[in-house]
Image: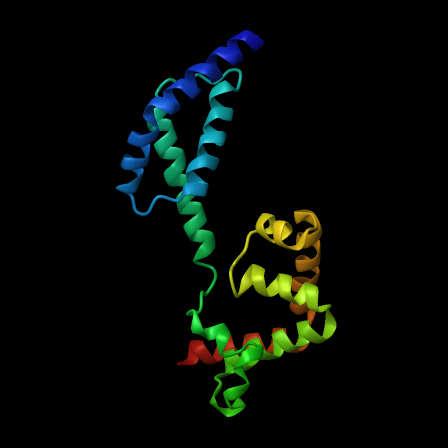
Length: 186
């Protein structure tokens, strides 16, 4: 049985190596090629190909269908979030002292208060991790681990603790709901 699985995996890997550039070109037709999704899709499809009882023979069609599906799921998840423009957080960060509080809109004031809350409640190192992960550079946990010299799981735990503190802060939740109502009304 394991010889059969090894053979399926070998054939799929050979096909993938031969088809790599063609697949990338084909997938670009559907929009921008997402490198992470492409390689994650390879691992997922390879796992499906070697699964006993599955008989996938048209690797290309299966790969493309799986890629499209995961891309659509990713887009759907991503559309649940709002991505402010680059200067949005610059107006709210520590360096934004030159901007009057009166010149900030409700969302900018909320972000500024959340960042102030994080700076006061957590260590400066944790605050920097949070800022580098979500606002300034959007570092991955792996990249943060390399920079900070601690494990990615430790960073993930610290950042999740910060996120939980912000989410459970009743004042922030209420203000966020009021902003949502206000934007709905206009």
